[in-house]
Length: 166
Image (cartoon, rainbow, N blue to C red; front, side):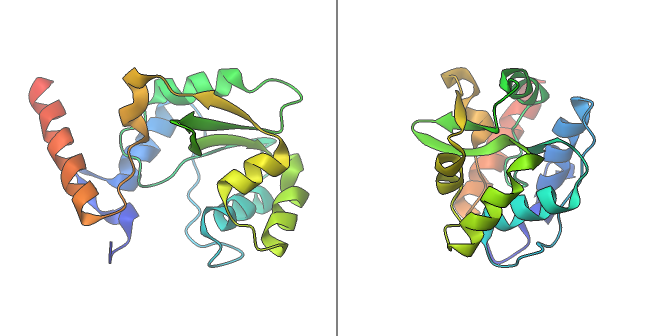
């Protein structure tokens, strides 16, 4: 993108502001990881940073580039994490990713993945034998990522369409 995605604007908020608002609407305490304890390890670096520095037993991970995620989807995800489950990842069309829940007790597994230079979320999900939550077609748009300038244009077009309907 050539810029900090979290600070890009979509309507009156930044991308991060949209995600933070969704998290806050669930009643959960939101915390932003601005720099990873282990840099340049992609999303797994952020996972490690959050697990290593949090007191929470379970952490909900969100990506700052998913501005359409809803509090309802986050609540549904939380209800699906059962006792004994180490993690629960969102799945859409065979791809796993954000948002997801991980219990802090799996920190050693995350450390092993980083040490073995396997920084992918799919690799972590496999190592944890994690369950997945399949997102329905009607909620697929909530997982839209803003990764390129073209994606940002699509997001802005969608946002303006939503604003006109409201």
